[in-house]
Length: 128
Image 1 (cartoon, one colour):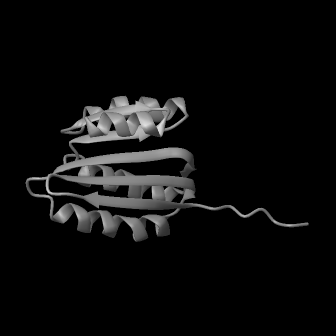
Image 2: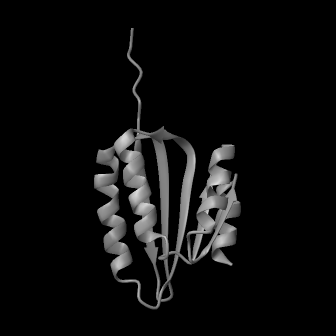
């Protein structure tokens, strides 16, 4: 009997031009503290050099299953640290709590945030 492989992790795409930094994060499975130890330094480095750039974030949570305890704390710290860095943040998901979390987070952020069920619609909104 084969054991089930439980994949988890965060994939990141960072794109930049003269006026804009675009970061796309896809969360998969149940995230761990190690996942955050790997991805947070990449985002921190990309955000360090963003003077005079518009910074947009897309977070795809369609394959996301939750956090281990320490990873949830890491996510909270990341959100607080970077909450005023993004001009626009789009969350793509398929769960009601994800949509509700955008409404709560929008009050803590400088920029605009919006929930989508389709990645293409999120990209369209971000590129306006």
